[in-house]
Amino acid sequence: MRTMLLSFKPEWYNKIMDGSKLFEYRRTFPNEEIMAYMYVSSPVKMIVGRIHLGKRIDINTWKEQYKADKEVCERIDDFLTRHTYAMPVLSFQMTKEIELEILRKFNPNFVCPQMYYYLDNYPELFDFVRKNATDIGELHINSFVNIEKDEICRKQY
Image 1 (tube, rainbow, N blue to C red):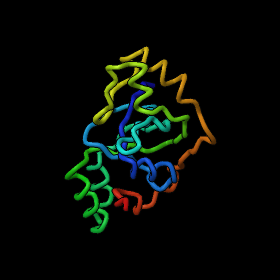
Image 2: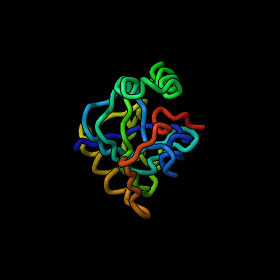
Image 3: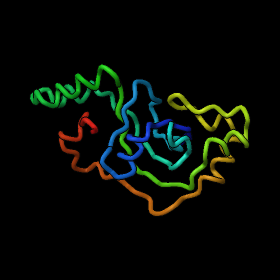
Image 4: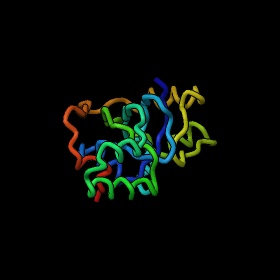
């Protein structure tokens, strides 16, 4: 499984952390399971956790699956204006924080991801993150056994 550094806005990180966000939506994403360190953008500006994402789901397949439900289809259509794929959030683990200034001290050329990049391509950075973003607390595992239609393209407030 490849590992990436994945950027999140604070509000989406908080929803993943509290378990209310079960799917991560993106316009582009690799078609494989991914382990990602979570970089939270301004004003947080630090790595704060690790997330395990399942294989991507083309949101259009949900449109076919829920075609008889107008409300779900309207939500799906709305999401399709911004996203193509949904990745199940299989698990989430808080980690020791690594602030942006520490990342830049380690590597002055460090660039925060706009969306994501593979840490495998940057072995020294990957090793630094792995050694410093150590686990804190319990691993949170999400179950996808009984996903309700309300979870599909659910607006996050």
